Length: 278
View (cartoon, rainbow, N blue to C red):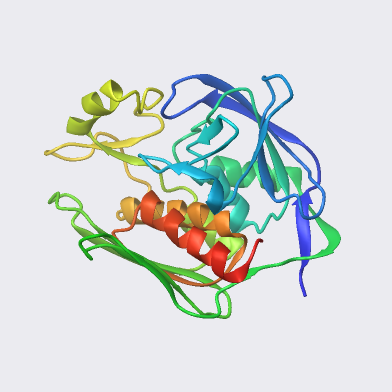
């Protein structure tokens, strides 16, 4: 049975939050066995903590938000994705704001940050979220879904459906290993439609977004170069890996069609309830 892991040493990173636009300083610290991934507000009295679990999800509007006791952390999915890909069981994420830095809009910075810290194996055995039956979540119109089926490993198959002629239907299918994730998934950045940006700003969202950390497209084409021709679906895979980490370190095959944070986190909750706390 594999052992639990944590970071070998603390590491830090600073930047702005994607939605808040606020400067934030982040420190990832080692944590003991059975701690899980815990977000901590280092700037507030008592340093309130929220465990990153599916039953702590409070919002899925354009990002995944967790909260407890009046404290929330949002846009956690890119960091959670890197932690999941590297199979980190225990980590304390210390922030002096409510949102991790966006970095370049992908998860590669976080992946490399964890790599630079090193990974330490702990004595306690890992309790994986082993998918032993079919779990499925559909939207109300049965047009979008995400499901988990038994599989000896961790695989993600995702079909993205976008009505824009520039994007259309994109599909990718990956066996998730740290090496593949770093090369084929982690560099994929978040994406925005230019016409939606003003409305997002009116909603108080995307205030830290820029051409440096968001791929933007309009009716004529892309405003910045792509890392992959199908970068949108690869970023969707970044998100689903991060959202599913809220159920634990998953062993199974995730199959999704046009899924987003709401469906992803609902599936994570269903898995968490079905296989127990991880």
